[in-house]
Length: 320
Image (cartoon, rainbow, N blue to C red; front, side, top):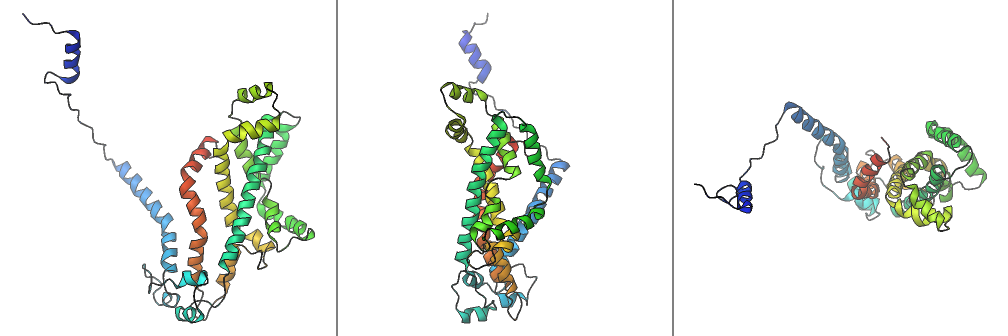
């Protein structure tokens, strides 16, 4: 005759076994297939191809410019030197520049960096603000011809930017804004079709019940936008601001066309001019790569800090 165990003890033995210890389950090891190996090999190859230009830039910046021409294929810095960074930052004496084979031309790095920051930051703030307001009008306000106007607005995405450079140049010249920072900023300040489309996609996903509740309390469209929509949309606005800042920071042709003067010169244009100042031995590649590395640091820092949020929001907004 077997003893009958209480229900709680029977359940405990079923879960832990007669010995009182939980049974150990073996974890199945992931199967290593040929497809997985090829996928990882392809990913590593793409990563190396992507990072190699940055490594080569760093290797060139840390080399002595006069020695680069003797060992152009050396994968390591040739005669390790900080001379390129010192020349760019204005810390090298004329004797040091001559000994390192650098160019005697000057690069007012801090002035050009300040101009680039002013231009990029102003364009970013203006585009995010005005594009968000336009996107809210297209997504929430009901007015005759809204869809037709939005369609015509999006057709501007198919117009190459080079086509509008000449009309914009004539306008800036007639306004007397050549060789000024406002002349560089003005054509990009208000909005772009992509920015409006990006924010409109997010606004369409916001529940209308929130706005309807605010309207019942007597709030108008401006109050709803600034008190409700903007606090709910700071993440896509941050993503749009990051994209806009990177684009404005990298712009070259328009600042070259409008801001060739010393006081209005941005960093991208200054690097091109620095490249053309060739010493006797050849271009100052070490100084040029050092300046390019320093110029790329703000964008790289922004991308590393907000890169994950940028990718998530692009997918959420339907941008592929």
